[in-house]
Length: 102
Image (cartoon, rainbow, N blue to C red; front, side, top):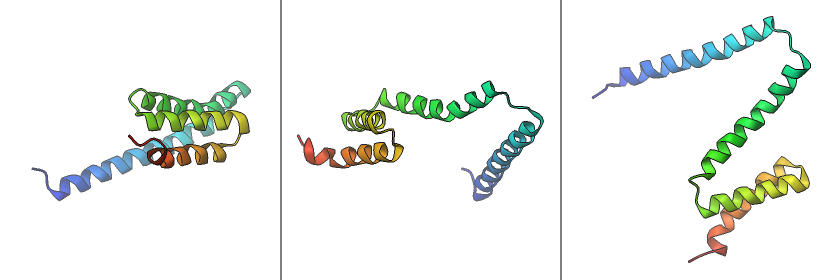
């Protein structure tokens, strides 16, 4: 059985590791000159990470999650608005039990 000190130590170690990686990234980027190709890569990186997380979640998702995600993707493609896509996805997920009740 672990005690409270073990949990506190683990939190401190994880916080220090997170802080160190954040600082080291900023320090390393101060020595690197960004080319236009690298800038395009970094701009698209966050979108690709989110897409990978959503895709891996959809593999084991239920019908409600798949429906809400597909609707959000459709709204995003038509409106080009992230806010409207998130709103549509949340609304269909919230209304799903009322629309399709077995």
